[in-house]
Every structure is written in C-alpha cells, then in structure tokens.
Length: 288
Image (cartoon, rainbow, N blue to C red):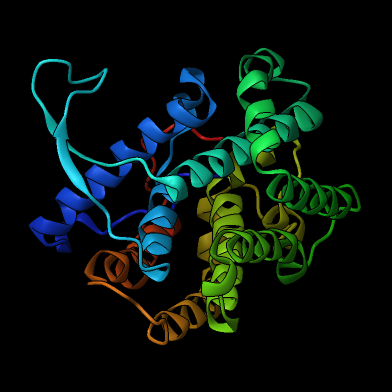
C-alpha cells in the first residue's frame, strides 16, 4: 500500500533531486538509528515525502552533509542529518509497514516470516510512538471491518486510511498543525488507498481478495477492461481527490522553498495516477 507518493522526475530541478535523495538516505539512517538495522528494509518514498513536507511546515532546517552509507561505503554522498523528527517519521514508517504485513497475514495467511522478522523493530517503534501505533491499529481495524463487509463504496472504504493519515500528521506536527494541513493529509491518505486498490485490481481479482474496484464493478474481469468500460467514472473519483490535494497544497504555510513538495503534490500524484490507469508499473520499492 506504500511507495506511490513519488516525484515527477523529468520535471524536477537538480537541487530538488539532490535534496530528495538526501532525505531518502537520511530517513534510511533514521530507521536504523531509531528502530534497528532491520527496519531499513521498510524504507519507502511515501515517508520520504512526508519527511520533506513536515520539516518544512515545522520550520526545521534540513542539514545535508556528504557521508558514507552501507550501500555506498567508498564514495560519500549527500545525506540529510537524522534529527528528532526524522526518527519519529522512521517509527511511523515501521508501524505502518508492520500493520500492512499483519493485514497480509489476516487476508492471505501469508507473510508470517516477514512479519516476525520486523517484530522487534515494530516493538521499538510502538514503545517510542504509542499514540501513532494506537491510531494505526484503530484505523486498520475499521478498514478491516469494511473489507469484511465487502464494502462497494469507493468513498467510504478510503475514509479510514484518510483519517489515519490526518490523525498521524496532527500528532507529528502538534502546534504546527492546522485544519488545512489535516485536510490535505486526509486526501493524500485517500489517494494512496485508492491508487493501491486500482493497481492491485488484477491480482486481487485473481486471488479473490478484497478490492473496492472489484466490488464496485462486478462486470469486469481485468483492469484493462475496467478502464475501457469505466475509466471515465474512475477518473472522476481520482480527479475529485487530486483537485482537493492541489487546492490545499496552494494554501499551505511553507517556511522554506517548496519546489520539491510542489513537484510531488502537483505533478507526481497526477503522473502516478495516469501511469496506473494505463497499466504501467510505477513502483520499484518493496510493497508494504
């Protein structure tokens, strides 16, 4: 369910490409520092974006220095310094990944070894961020209830994930949060849930797993047919969510330059939606 919130690389400034990679590597180091080295396997682009956005909104300057890392032990590369916010986002990353793995076990009775592998990291993250863990658990429980009831409402099924993101942002930002930011987080959460469901249409249809698009369009057997027959209706759903994201993005109170987050929120999300509608594979990270 994660790995979709990414940049539109062809339209990025060089400076933003460097910053994005530095933040990605910084979060990777933050995962190791906060939750143990195993936690670094759950690193994804969505949380990198969140780190960039929240550092800006909280007015925390990102310090980037050339450092060595495990993957690049000889040549130094720009890496963002691990600060308190980065460690908190790292804990969130682990908590979200663990509950996604747990969800896979419940749905398919698969992934028990992978879940066990990350359990120690999850326990560390839960101890450090109990409020976030409680939010994720409660919202995943609500989502599971709707899935068990075979919910066919696209708007209703995406609501728990949107609310989860909203409540998490409120915990992380604290006094720097406002209604516009919470609403933005809600719609980003909805988009993540829906784009994942659309991307997984063929896999879920074949396995008989829950998927809201499968339930809402019972007359289709594969995603290509789904898009051919109902593509306009589906694009209206996504256009509504993306329109709110764009509107709310323009109203944010940024503290620093926001070219990078603008690239992701104005261009990256649209590009990802278009690619998945056209059946292109968009992710090159592990799917947790």
